[in-house]
Image (tube, rainbow, N blue to C red; front, side, top):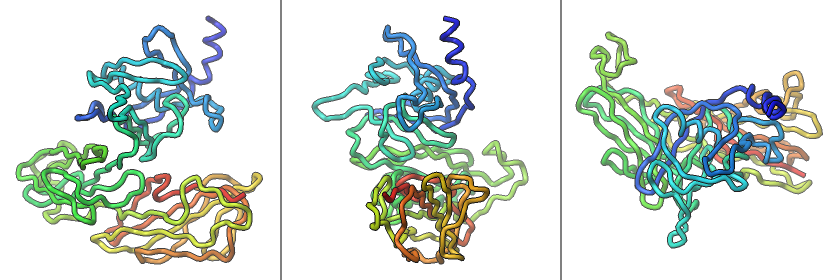
Length: 371
């Protein structure tokens, strides 16, 4: 027992992470909250004892770290937690969560599908490491449904319409025909709801054949009624429907995880930005490359790759370059991209100075390789 305790000590010392965890049952939301977890073992009380749940079963993450499975157990055991029945066989498997059956149904092919940041999970709960800010979703579904994501302003004046936007969590594209607050979204994915009385109201979006969205709380306040708790007395609240939503930018033409053969690397970088009520101010791209330990970024000014700051690797050490203010972006590189692993990001800013700084793989970020 002493040797086991010493072996697990480094994993327990890993830095904790906070993620948004949501569990959607067949007809209701079973759990939705922010969860903080560290590297930990899990015990599903199925008689098999404690199991490592640190991502080291994934060859891409040999160093122990927090996982989706660790976040699930932390949520179940924490304040406002839930009961579950499950077993461990290669990874975690569940049959009941918060009183709802989530076992595989051969008649409908529904099961507890797992997602991270809008993408279907490629690994099991204990093999998929997470980082702070990740969005983790368990949903009882077939795994082929569209994932809905809802956004909206945190506050609004009573009686003034608030604009809620429904998008595809995986691609960022607007979703029409979704129901939210008794309204139906249009082609731009938005619907307007009005809060007549002061205080908070929580909304979720739904659509037949799709997995319901995250919850969004909008609070109606005059700014002097202290109705929203965090709004101090005397604070100014706009009586107009101010645009607080970031423009939706999506990369196209290069798929997440795509591999190009040598000499066939892409030359054109393409992105599309959904129509924004405030109009576009600018669109920027960032392209970083790793090849045999050399870390470079593409300079839009010099139109060539340059060494990252102090040779550091990773997209955050690259630099953004402007590609205009149009909704359709087609940027032609000087030549086809050579061998390497690439991270391509797009970021749009509207004239109300809203921008989306969250990176979503397969939407405003794609990672790809050229052999």
